[in-house]
Amino acid sequence: MTAPIRLFFFRSSNGRPNFGDELSPLVVSFVTGREAVHAGPWDCELTAIGSILDRYLRVGGRVRTGLRKRLLGQRIAVWGSGLIAEAEPGGHALDILALRGGLTRSALRAGDGVPLGDPGLLVGRMIRLPAKTHAIGIVPHYVDKADPMVRALSGLKGVTVIDVETDAMTVTRQIAACGLVLSSSLHGLIVADAFGIPNQRLKFAGNLKGGDFKFSDYASALGRANRLAHALTTPEDIFLLAKQEFDLSYQGNVDSVCDALEKALKEVY
Image (tube, rainbow, N blue to C red; front, top):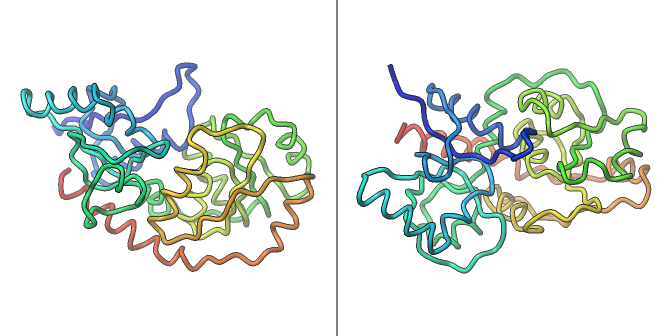
């Protein structure tokens, strides 16, 4: 019997799931055909979805990862993970299979041949595109859930507010059932891209750790113009956003990014 893959992905200490992180074991299992189980950052063999690489770049992290590799013969492989914020280029002891984007690649001094992309894009290959149920889906980051603007948006006709702290595949299907996605959550945008759905980034009052970095990092992998986030003055502003012309040409790169990601993981697992 094949052993499960020991996968590190973020889990909150309060026990609430965040769908982007919880997609990680589902996507890894989909690509490899093997079970993926949660492991700690130093007990894992693989990292995938999430801004989770910072700890491995610190001096203590580099030493600890290097000792594992040299003394125990146990590596930590990286498949599509990223940094949370800009970092000075530096060394590491990770085995790089793929990275989320060019900014992370530069910080890790990885070669130009390293595949780029967020593995969350593969959800488009995991489930069929459902029928549309809402014209507009709002996907607030969990730090934005209590924002008064989010509550106001939930009362608008044709609009659904999607809770990212629920079952990962339920959230994915809800996003896929929207005609337009407006999100302050990175993986709200990524899932929309996976299904070819127009999407734009929103900004609420909550300050996301790392600011624009992870959004710019992800966008670089697809050749997506990294537009600044839209701040709403009134809830009805979303209907003005919905009337805008969206340049979706970058979504033509999704399949090639997904092909490269699948190949990179299957070559090892």
